[in-house]
Length: 117
Image (spheres, rainbow, N blue to C red):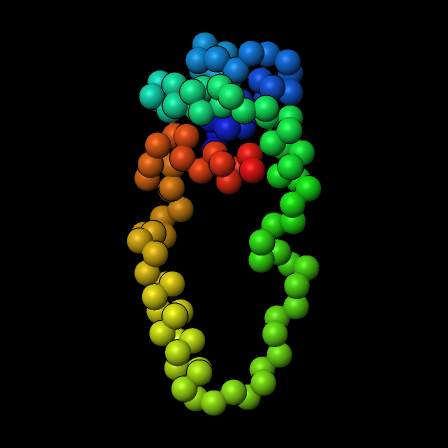
């Protein structure tokens, strides 16, 4: 995530988002820079209008946000409840080992679409 933050800092300060500048910001923050991730991020952002993407991202409410109320329990039948439990078990095994370190799981550019719309 710090790579994306560094790109946002460069964008906000009017600096070009390139490998040299991104590496400089990351090193200044004390990050052990992986050049492959820097290259991937610079390539992923090459045709992205960051200002527009940030505006679009802030205009769309987050899915599952705190604004909605939980549905009331209608006292449905047991078969429906058992089906829901099966879905919960399937959702629980998402392949995440729970260590919270998703940065090493894929390409550095993966997930940028979600961040920038």
